[in-house]
Image (cartoon, rainbow, N blue to C red; front, side):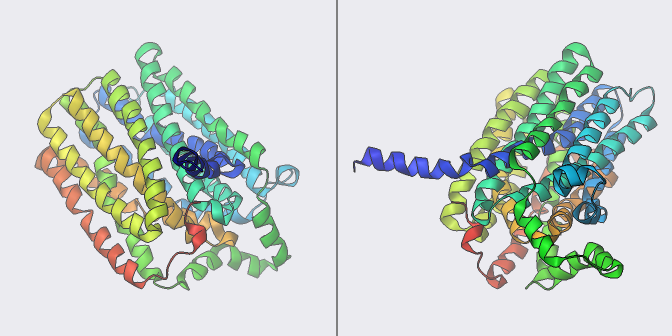
Length: 437
């Protein structure tokens, strides 16, 4: 066999796992998961800033993300409750998927029709509605993805999910900006709302997850009190029996605080520096997307070479360093190449980190309680950052200035890195099924 043939076989073997039905379904699910988030994150920040809303009010809208952080409170209902009629026809997971997709589309369209200048309170209600259905959409999407992936597909599926999330988030955000510049915000939100449709397609492609159905079938019918326990108590009780459970939860809670603060404040920085919507769409959204996709690809290679724990440590360091780029951009002013460099590095680091983080959190979940446990872990990963963003970030920016604010976000990444170093010494090795093919 020649070197050329060997290299071709190596590349074919590396790409093949991503072309299987389940990882492709994870890609479609990720696209739909990212769109609602974009509508209440950077897109809404740009719309409010453009409308002349003051910085403190704009940053206060970050509190709507807290619904994402508290989604574990109603995730048990997604795990256990069957929608009458529809669940019998298509299965429990797919019934929830189709219903919440429709609700998400309706909520986004409604938010686009609200004028924040005329009625800021109604805009708050609309944003909360999108956040609620977006968070619920996340619950069922994450559960459906994890339940559908085979153990050996966890790495590839996590990577494809990250590809999809960024495609959906950036794609919906870019379309909203371009359409808003030409046809108004109501039409922009209408166009972005249909990014929820790929999840419905994934439901038809993958069918009801067989592995979870088999596990639940073994449990059999439950008395009322046992059903209550298995719905609300068992998911947490199961997790707390794991080794180092408290340390894991503390790590999940603090590791993204700096990154979350930096990213949710980015559009305020860009508006303050004077970048127009087209520059933001090109360099932040589109160029950033390309860098993210490259990061996911490189992250998959690093993940396979180093294993889950060491790859995640490397990615945590890179994501912390990326916040320094925001501080540098704040000193440069509205320079397009500086914006491109900043967003390129930040998105590359996020792409690498996303593969490791999502696979790690998925690996921690029990198949019986996928929706609840993953909702709890993913919600905890950003609750502190979003809370600070919504309550004090605006005041911190005004008092410290953008440069010192982003230096502060870099320092906030250090505790999570140190705690994960402790976990690396205490956690048992990840099984081979946690490493991508």
